[in-house]
Amino acid sequence: MRDSSAFQPRLTRSGEEEFERCLRPARFRDFLGQERLLEPLEVMIRAAMERSETLEHLLFSGLPGLGKTSLALALAAELGTPLKVTSGPALERAKDLVGILSSLDQGTVLFIDEIHRLPKVVEEYLYGAMEGFRIEFTLDQGVHARLLKLDIKPFTLVGATTREALLSSPFRSRFGQVFRFEPYSEESLQRILERSAGILGVPCAPEALAVLAEHSRGTPRVANRLLRRARDVAQVEADGRIEASVVERTFQLLGIDEHGLERADRKVLEALARAEGRPLGLKNLAVATDEEEDTLADVHEPWLIRRGFLARTPQGRVLQEAGWELLGLRPPEAT
Ligand code: ADP
Image 1 (cartoon, rainbow, N blue to C red):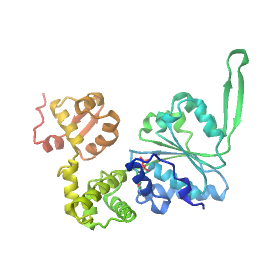
Image 2 (cartoon, rainbow, N blue to C red; image 1 turned 120 degrees about the vertical axis):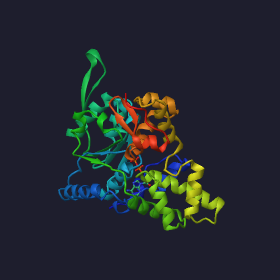
Image 3 (tube, helix red, strand yellow; image 1 turned 90 degrees about the horizontal axis):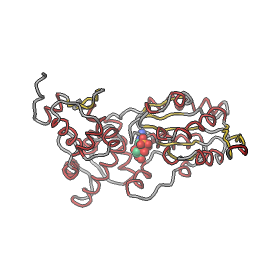
Image 4 (tube, rainbow, N blue to C red; image 1 turned 180 degrees about the horizontal axis):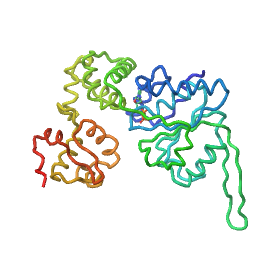
């Protein structure tokens, strides 16, 4: 198998991205937790390799930061194949897709992030490429129109989505397997934090990592972000070691309260309380909290729902008993 570092995508060098890049698990053995996903995937890989076939197309579904990109990168490294990374919004026109597909080497893992944001016309071109490794498109218009057929080298499409429900069923059915990423256990997050701290060379007390894991919302990206902030605090205000007191101070600076709520979470709960039990739609909630709709739906709400503070109903979001209690308020009497 080839050196996986060659397959890391080039990212712009903002601090956050650089940090993510260096902590990304490069191989399956570094991809911690999620054994439920890895085991069947390893079987699929072995079977495809033994038959000298290209691995079937895969769909990775789950909330942001759960490791979809990391697993796609590690997958290419395990297969020893080239990797091409793009995203739904970047493939604006069919031409963009044709350009990428026609340049793929045999067996390439083509990773399309946010695949639910692929424009419909581009998606339809992709169907033929996924099924028969061929695309047909019309060149010119009117009497000069010509139908061109382009053969593509067999490749594996790995699509990642935070909104699986937005994919049309013909599209979904073209994937050989859907892998659904679940939030990580605190134990897995602690192992991820230990690995990250080791890579960064930051000494940490195990109990400090346990508290970081507990407040990571089941998400490795959040865990690594909190670790990074705690590393700053340890460096500036302590002797460089992350102790429980450093974590406590970090949470204080980040506005994370004793329930693990961030400021934005609290704003959501307070907006719902102001609605006095009436359900609020996502749009209204975004206006009331001054947050992006996607951030609310993908980052804050899933955690608040898991904690039992709010519920999504067909009419909108409503505060639950535990949410009222946390705010120290009583739910309005049912009429
Ligand atoms: P997604 O594509 O689902 O948004 P990423 O793959 O970008 O998530 O993961 C975000 C970060 O979390 C990565 O940079 C990596 O450091 C870390 N990470 C995610 N999953 C794992 C895992 N299973 N083991 C170790 N680190 C992980």
